[in-house]
Length: 214
Ligand SMILES: [Zn+2]
Image (cartoon, rainbow, N blue to C red; front, top):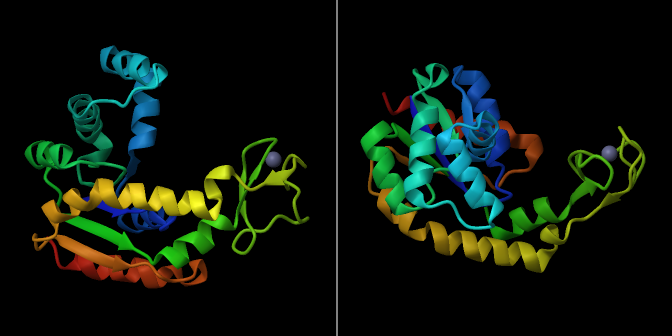
């Protein structure tokens, strides 16, 4: 089963993807990891990606498509995958339909209030980069990292106004993509307005959706 996961930053996509991946025995493939892997390998594609990323430019669709396609053809993904971070544009979605058409598209939705509450509670260690949350994953001692004793801070990215702006950008970018997918029978909206303690209520909806395809 080839599954694409869509969702705004802070919607819990990474967490859900790794839970589902374990449950279904299919790899969780995130584009961030694919790119890091390609760069590490240092083959021709990897070198092209590296030079573009290092120059601070956006990797063009055509190259993103090639890199993702190559990754999805690897042995571990032969039975399917949970793909996170791709496609981002209609052009990418069109390309993916040709090389590995998704069997299901799960679009995780949550209200702005929920997302802001989640993201604004995040704290990052200035020492080792570990991530905590003031409600869901507290350090043993407030403001101090458990593993390296570094100071925990709130990233600028996680300020409410910055989050609101990131969500605007995300919505504008993905609107055409959602329109591209939402007429398909394989497209499902997943209500993700739950506390992280109730995450199984989100995964349950995903499982119900997946039981309807293939
Ligand atoms: Zn630390």
